[in-house]
Amino acid sequence: MASSIYGINILEKDKSTIVYRVYLIYSDWIRLPRTHGFGYLMLKSNWKKDNQSLDQLDTVDDFVLDTYLKGRKIIKSLLVSDFQNYPIHPDFTKGVWHYLDDATNTFHAEDILPNALYHMEVTDAKYIAHLEKGDAWETASCDLWGASWYLEYKSTSTAKFYHLYLDDVGRWTTHYGKIGTKGRKEFLAIRSRETAKKRVEAKLKKGYVMVYQNYDTAFGYEEEHAVQVVQPAATFDKEALLEAVQNNDIAVIKSLLENGVDLNDYEDEYGNYLASKCLKYNRRGDAKIEIATARFLLENGMNPNYATENMSIAHELIQNGDEALLKLFLDFGLDITLEDPGALACSAAEQGYIWLLEMARAKGIDVINAKVDHVHFANGFSALHFAARGERNTFATIDYLLENGADLNYNAPRNWGTPLLQAATGGMKEVVDYLIAKGADIHLKNKVGENALHAAARFGEAAVFSSLLAHGADYLIPTDAGAYAGQLLLIRMVGINEKRSQQSFDKLKILLEKGESFERLNVLPLKPLTFLGENITKKKRLKPYEERIILELIEAGLDPSLQDKQGRNLLHFAAKLNLAEVVKKCLALKVSTKVKDKKQMTPRDYAERSKANDCLPLL
Image 1: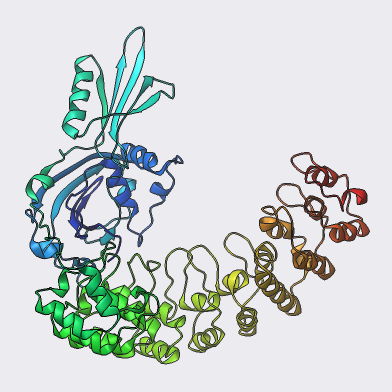
Image 2 (image 1 turned 60 degrees about the horizontal axis):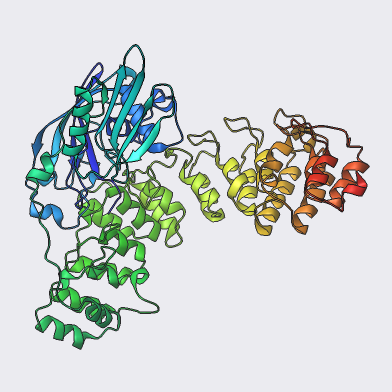
């Protein structure tokens, strides 16, 4: 089950107003959101579409307070009406995540989902410019604060404020004081909105004026009308059943069944049903549940579609990697249409289950073009991204997806990029070569302006980095932020671990052999030490292998006199970290000991502060 709580469907849009429905898609919830803070988060939560106006709003460090303030700034009104499917339908409570089906643009079991109609007016049309009629998505956004009232009292002698709200952990809190001061906060011993509202009404009677209320539709409808179905607690010995299952003791399971145990009543404290215990990562210790045991459970009524607290059983079975167990569940009615199409496609592609991709397509699920929207994945990935990093049946799966229309150069959101970029960061040299042979664009950048070579410079294996260069990747193409591959390599040269450091240095040597040089890197606006120092600044001391690599960088042409953004050169760092050999090398190259950084500190000042006893005599 995904972490998404609500589904959004935009019905109308007119200037600064949108009309949409909010669906409850998480079965442990009964209430629909009301607050302006939710309105702001909802506008931000459509990861498929960006809105610079929302991104550029002033921000405060406290996320909950930040959400409240932004909701207050951009939401003029948020009216909720036309509540549907209350009381809650019994089928809604069965632990199924009601995902968005991209093919139909509707939510699973939409006809039974609790929902309501929302009319939102924003203070400026730019805040909804990214949305269109027909947009639909899932969101984890919710009312981080409950009801909130902000009042002010002004007279000739004083100006006071009074703010009462339900905080994000369920405490009624009052914040009050003179306007223009920080004021003070108190947690109140009150239990209900009604009591809180009485306090607000008392303030209004004393002459306070309501300046802002963060909701426009009263709370309480859902609690009054939900009549949520509560499953009776199981009275059988759960531990006895689980132990019998884990020990493959069919005789004990049979005895429990004869005594009236319903296998579907089992649920552990984490919300996992019995079916999930058949999966290897939910077993205790080295327990191995045999296929025969799983078959017996299914034959005796264990529901193959009961979800766990975290994800659908279909998803777990695919990720589990036990193909025989997956096929057994399918034989007994496992419904793959209950899974998010993108998550299903990515899981199957990563495992190399071409047969499952074909089965999904036969059921009308577009696994070729579906994009994942699931808490256990990086949202926006395609099946081809996962096939490119899979370790089973990889090339055949890539071929299958491409032959059926998958976009080889689909660029996922944020920094995730193309399938080629994913293969490059994952150290999959053969896959990198294969994708390039299939026509992957080697220079295509991700959404943050980095291509496959940049990604491999940061995280990839030396063999992958070398292969990209051999295929024509141009190291003279910078990222959109202006950094070159040779500079990015320096970030992980020290301060990570020995394997990563050596790997980065090996890639640098490959790059230098291809024609890159410190003569060029030394004169770029962003100096090499800006990148090399990124992790050095976090260290109190370096290890011997790190000092060795710094010395090798100097031998390769790194100019130790060049300064980073803080005005520090390599001698400053060496003095601080007590790197005597590096200090000697810097001095031999005539690096000045008198240079001061932006803190007006010389290398010797750093050596004295950090008690670098090996370096002090040299400086």
